[in-house]
Amino acid sequence: MPSSEVHHLFHHPIADHSFSADRQTLAVARDNNVELYARSGSKFALQDELRGHDKTVTGVDIAPRSGRIVTCSQDRNAYVWEPSPSGWKPTLVLLRINRAATSVRWSPSEAKFAVGSGARVIAVCYFEEENNWWVSKHLKKPIRSTVTSVSWHPNSVLLAAGSTDGHARVFSSFIKGVDPRPEPSAWGERLPFNTVCGEYLNSTAGWVHGCAFSPSGDALAFTAHDSSITVVLPLVSLVWTSESEIVAAGYDCEAFKFRGDEQGWEFTGSVESKGRPGLADQREESALNMFRQMDLKGKVKDDTQLNTVHQNTISTVRSYAENGGSVSKFTTSGVDGRVVVWSL
Image (tube, rainbow, N blue to C red; front, side, top):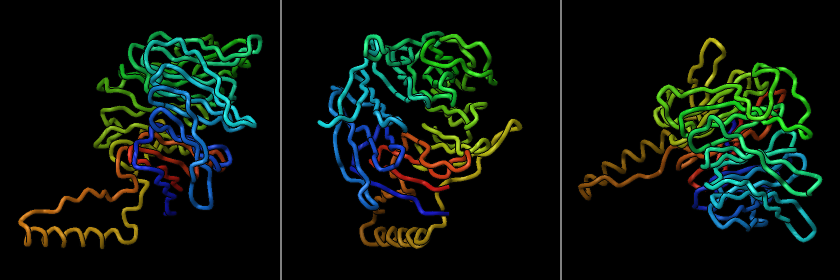
């Protein structure tokens, strides 16, 4: 399979990442700030830094068309950053929450964005022209615990959310005057704000870490802490690559593919090529060194190098390039400070 594109930016966890539409700018959440990297040849170089949050930044997203950046943090605030001649201009968004913000995503229309939180609410934010500021409305019931992830339906009205109460839910975020009336879909026809269009309990009530709609929006997938997609360790994030395939990743430090339809789903393997050149030799050399250490020192040398591209938990999976309605490339970022572009 095609080789992956690895960018080891630093030795520090990446909470979230986002690429611009032209893939020339990369935003990564690091501690209290968001670092902006610009592509320089085959690498990314630090270009700017967005400072404004006073606690850990938990989410970042770049709007594909406008280029605006939205960030959220454990300080319970969100900022919308717009480019200006003097640099990035931040606008504070009052989320009206009393717990940390956990995740943020722009809607496909870019007229709204959603912020998950530990306050058992989702703040749906939109720009109010009359007052020239961003305001928020809350999706509340029946959320009973922290919202870990949010994902938009292609129509920019339906919103999926995963929570630590073991549920994945689909809500209507329709706002009169902002959204055009959506077409009837598999999720319903009349969709006033805060309508619960679907509610799904994980079989063991494990935390739901990630959720995503299929390209058509007719199907929803979510990953939970109980490894419910037959993976040994819990998955944290996922992306639909086509109507019949999902890529998910998490604590196993590599991405896995799943295929299926309404008849059922099955695990089809790792995205990484286990037979890549040099891997067998590396394993043979490691075994030889192990016996040498046992012979010379009476102990085995600690080997902390994993046989995967990522060397620690993968925290985010996002679409990177699409072709004919299917994802041809996707990106991952993780606790090891790497952002990797994968080809399918």
